[in-house]
Amino acid sequence: MSRQTTGAGQITLMERVSATPFARVRRLLVIAVLVLGALAALAALYLQVIIQATNPVDVFFLPLMFTLFPTMGVALVYRPDKLQLVENAAYLMLVLYSLSMLVFQVRHTLPTLHTFSETMFWFPMLYLVAYLLHRRAMAFRIAATIWTASLVLGLAFTPFAELYRVRDASAFNTLLQFYISGAVYALLLYAFSRIEEGYAENRMLAYLDHLTQLPNRRYGESLLVHLFREMREGRRRFSVVMLDLDGFKKVNDRHGHDVGDRVLKRCALLIQRYLPRGARVIRWGGEEFLIVLPDHDIQAALSVAEEVRRGLERSPHEGVGVVHASLGVASCRPEDTLETLIQRADQAMYLAKQAGGNSVRVFAPGLEVSQV
Image 1: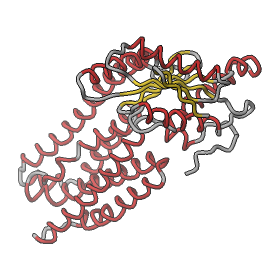
Image 2 (image 1 turned 180 degrees about the vertical axis):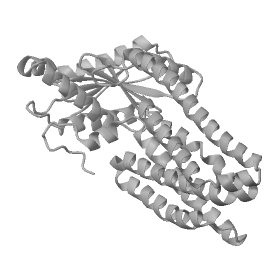
Image 3 (image 1 turned 120 degrees about the vertical axis):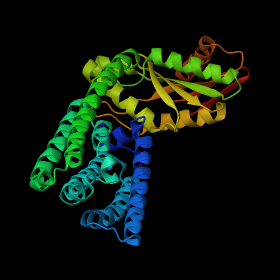
Image 4 (image 1 turned 180 degrees about the horizontal axis):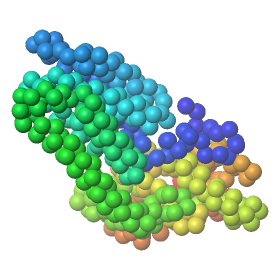
């Protein structure tokens, strides 16, 4: 996919997808789960055929899962923006399979074995996955809908007259435990999600810049302290890049602060787009951003900084045009402190400013490198 923009200045869907910090990890995880799900479906169907214990639900759904899950995984490789659609489609298939299996169990397995087979042990996972895919309110509605559907189907298809005639208390106990435990799982997950979202919201407010949705300076300083500790333990090295948008005050003066805010938000997304895996970009203050590059020496950091500079250069903003940046690179040394490292990156950035902007500089004893 081309990294150039159309010049419209709008934040495109692909820019949002590529800039989301954990989107790539989540997509890879979903692909892995889909592949494992397809293999599990094939293995389950094969074992049932071998022991001649197939049922119509598995005969219908397992081949379907084996076919569709890998197809969804391949689709995600080429269309990462379809992640949410694939997640919801796979989840819907699991819900339909589980509810269909419940109908089969209450009609055939329960009257015979007086309990459910092992397959139904996985039913509560539907409630958990709902909370993994959606925020609390939506997840609770989905979980409540699934539980209600299971109750309605159970009432509709369970042969109560037959079970009552044979005085099958264990079967009634199985049904009772199934529905009570399902309600308890759903309510507990709702309670835990409220606690987790409250904690996450407080943490976000403390460490997130509200305008750009980037980590703020407080988070950046704590991250650097952690990296300093790892460096002194001999585990890793790192570099930083101080980035300042050139002439940003003129954007605010000429177009107003609303347009300036829009440009800042889009620049934040674009910077993330051109960073390697594991890098972090932090809004340091005003129009300054700090890029943290774990496991990068000075030359590797220079290459990343130049890639970011070029990316901003070829991404004009609607009604504003191109907003360039000056970037200063510094690599951490054993004797460095947080203050000295940031000071060197600042000095390098000011060298880039003095050179006319839209450039990259590194400040080090006896070494000044420019890339324009």
